[in-house]
Length: 459
Image 1 (spheres, helix red, strand yellow):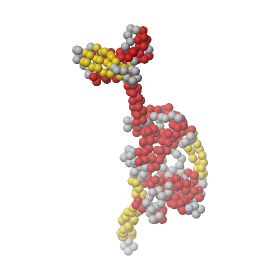
Image 2 (image 1 turned 90 degrees about the horizontal axis):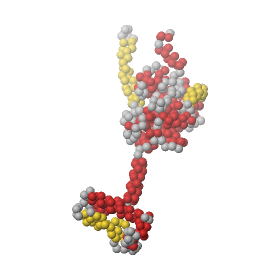
Image 3 (image 1 turned 135 degrees about the vertical axis):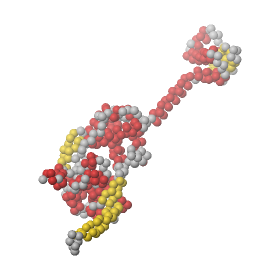
Image 4 (image 1 turned 90 degrees about the vertical axis):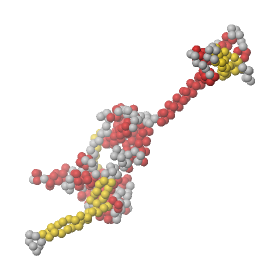
């Protein structure tokens, strides 16, 4: 077997192409191909033992040229020595792999870099997951564990909490990924939120929503970092001092002279009162329409003494029409039926059972005007935690009234009337007495009064 080099006709540049002939009698191989290299004929024809040739062969150009030729010859002879019967295409492949080795390696390197860039671009990161999560709960493609769409208010609250994580990254100049969410992150993140003087429940909400994101991403296979499950990595929540309105407060609100304001304030007052008498969230009581109103007729049997026959009675039937509102709560999807009090029926009739809607932000602003005008100016001591520090401050009652005060007021007034917790739950839609109790804001004197009226034990 043998590999022999030769040169072909001289080209315009004065150089001649180099050919290789591969021969093996044993394997019946006789192939000639261009190598893809060229050389000056004068150099190729030099005496291989001459000083001039040796000088060229040790030059940079010569070392490269003859180094490639030696590598080609060695590779081909190795194949032939292994008994491989080479075809013309095999020889061509061997030659190209050696001649274009650097170019091939560079091409592979660039391809690997491009593949790595593509993989990085396609890899799910924490921030990408958050953006996808936001979009999906907004358009309904991601639902709650109960298979229901997220309520608009819930979407808004989740976005507000996750925005703080985005701001934290901007402030620190660092992009956090799944594996970065550990206890050190927790300490840094909560310290950042406290520095912004947020209440402890706001801090807890931000942590809670981020933990929920991490859980969803883990269950969907995007990471295996379980450090966020540490018992110290938690969203702390404390009971907040929030008010309810007494019946006297409600009477003041209804009697308030709102002539200095436009019709919007009167409507806002009526909408708020609907919230009080239904004990619903603003997303439910600010959207009641005619289709939600129903009536039920009950036959009630009465027996009165018969004036003409002592000891006898006269039976008669009273037909009682009960008006009630069917509500599918937007936040939880729970269905509740709320009997209409006389106060609620008066408001519904005023608007022909089709109460106009006011945006929540506007409603909150109007409510403060209304309550201030109504004279709800008593000082209320509020205890909160801001920036990790307990804070006590006094505010006038009207400053603390907002849309959710209606729900707290309704639940509390039902409780003070003697209604059982489980019956109240059927109206408010709370899933447990414990959750409902957080809404009941009766002060201690009212509770004492309620208990002593109900039980003879304290007589």
